[in-house]
Image 1 (spheres, rainbow, N blue to C red):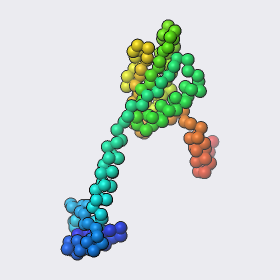
Image 2: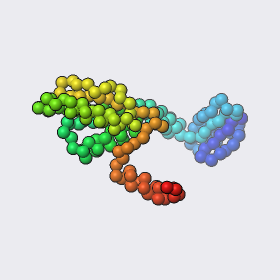
Image 3: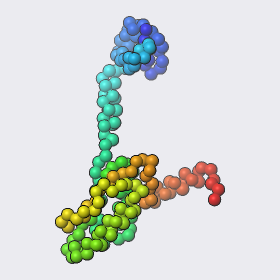
Image 4: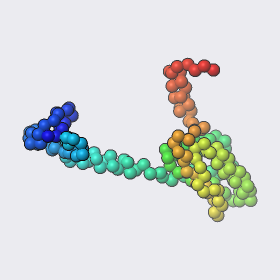
Length: 180
């Protein structure tokens, strides 16, 4: 005896009946839970079943973190700085590592302390989203720092985009009123 199903529940039946039923539909009988009592089988197209299983396995594998890069210049404008921080937060929120790179050009090398201050500011602004994996280090005309995301439950975004803030306001208005 086995439990067989297509889209709807067929119930407990003999193995020979389940095979005959699957063949009459032009499909295959596939065992999904061998350890269950009685064993559970599904009537499906086996090729499609294998394809879906491999696609599901591939999705599970692809969840590893990638390394994203954000480039700064010493004399960056405030608005540009905020935009780049929002992008960095998005990358960190998706579980990716972020390499922050500061590039000196020409006479900017004479004021390396300004670049280090900017890197310290980036580190401070993203401390609720990431840990510093590699401290800022000067290599040639570039200063590089690597940030790794905090665990999902400890992340707190500060620099959300305008659209995201609008969505939060709509969600707050739609919910129950809070006491202030």
